[in-house]
Length: 61
Image 1 (tube, helix red, strand yellow):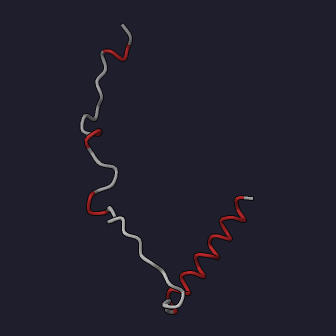
Image 2: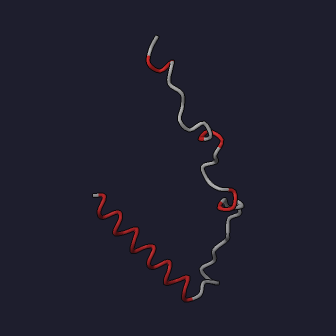
Image 3: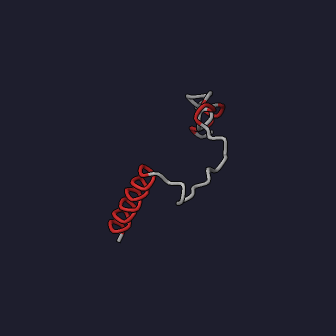
């Protein structure tokens, strides 16, 4: 008889717990983005995102 037969799992509740709590799950709806309706904050966020993506891609090479 091997060692695994006598050992029990320490955390029996682990399989019942969800990976993401229900209050943090999104509703699955996509938000449509329009360049014409973007305000200054949206444009700045988009520029920061593009700059971060370029930095991340340059580090990968």
